[in-house]
Length: 274
Image 1 (cartoon, helix red, strand yellow):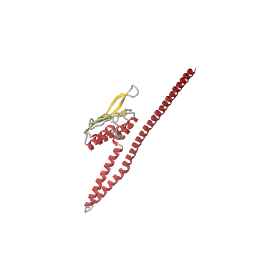
Image 2 (cartoon, rainbow, N blue to C red):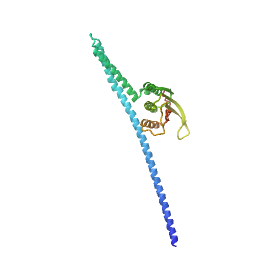
Image 3 (cartoon, rainbow, N blue to C red):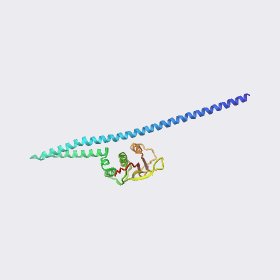
Image 4 (cartoon, rainbow, N blue to C red):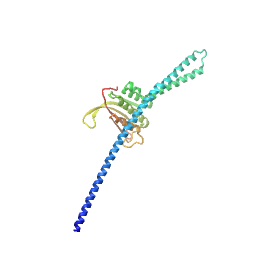
């Protein structure tokens, strides 16, 4: 009888252990689900915050560019006109004050340099070519200016694509960031830039959609793209902006084999940024 009692106690103890293990697994699974949901929420919040900061940055750039164009531009132009009037008055005097005219010429040259600098800053903050000439012209100007400033050979093949203003600005900033990185790190001799329409499947379904694909390739020193870079905030911010426009950004590189950056954005409407 005592043997049966011991077996019953043993069976009850085993059953209790199994129930405790089951409750522990259920508790752990519940905690994992909560942690997964918390990570998902935080990831979404960080993505939204990053997009908000990028948008605020572009808005601030636009405001600053407008102020520079309207206020500083007016001041510099007014000063240049005053200098021209003073020069005309001095030149009309019987005995021309040579020293004053030389100083005035230097002042005019300084004002011209200031006006040119203001234009460069405005173009960097908010490219007027993008708004007035379209995406193709803006990218082409960016390529030519980079070639002139860096001394590298830049080969461009740019085709018309249909993109809205936000997507066109994302592509412009992507090329700007890529060229800046090439100038700083690539040690390249040549750069190839292409923009074209391509087609591919839409993620999550079997439908196909047209995309705009920007490709920037260089023949520089390259790097291990699988390794985590020490500082790549510009590229990370660009990735968030591209994904916010339902696009994709990819980077491929190997040591000694250059680097290739691709940005793919879905085409929208019938607007052709050419």
